[in-house]
Length: 283
Length: 113
Picture 1: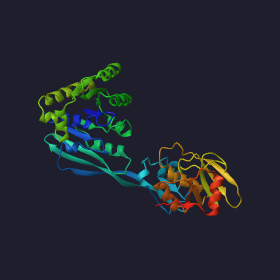
Picture 2: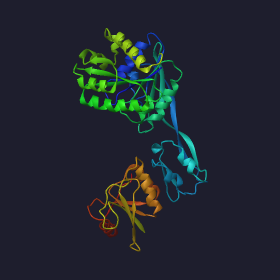
Picture 3: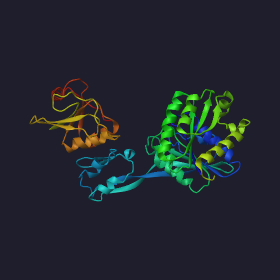
Picture 4: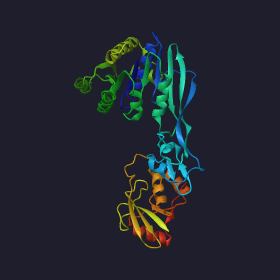
């Protein structure tokens, strides 16, 4: 089973939920936790340990000057501006390339060859028994987050139970993370900002076709607007975590509330049961 | 010599546009004949990478000089490689005003690095 943890809004507690859920599950079974927030992965802060790095490459064009006639077809085709055809040379801007391969298809001279370029890496570690952590890391200045997310998810393939920690937002990286998931936990907070972005994230999960439930974090007990929205949309509320100084203190030193505070191991086990229910597949 | 100027509309009376890659129009003026050609910029709403693609348009029109407000890093690299000299016009005048200033030699070259 594959479970995605997403939110729309940043800072709602996706990683907190993913880390605690993974830790609790690892006590009874093998679990893989994939950090798909490749622009700022941070699950390793909860689970320190030595990692093995696998580079992630994407194909980018290389021009054969002996064959190129500067006809300009590749430059006209590239909607990302990765190729500039000038009168006596072709400039390649590899960091603008989205690796669609179109330039090599349209070149009438066969002058465009694709060469691999490293855009990030995937770090694999086994920080605690029965837990494998796979973190996607996008290099600074790069745009191809989905390529790194794909690679991280691929390395987790074949495991019976996988958690995907998504990035905030609702664009390509989140869609890439949600693809192929059996269920999605939407982490929100009961503020106007949390609700606004929850709406967007719920729409994305629905469009991708992943059954979703909501987790309200840092609740001050006045969650009516969020609860109304969930009722309206038929989204089950899977768990509510109260606003608490004690929880924040554990979190802020990189601790896990399921390990450090009484009662939370059971509550995260209950969260898993609720997720299994919405996924409609056997765990 | 052909000079390309970023503009907000067609013709040499149009106000100069400060942005390069997302300028609504490029006005190309042949300084020998005085003839001008206005080209609508198809990159106005493009997602990204507009700088190098706009330089490619300049090269296709045979421009040796660009007059605009400012350019980004990728565009600068392409302009340099393409041997197109870029000058800054930060006034609020027309394409014709910018051309006159260029002819008078009062425009500063745009720093491309």
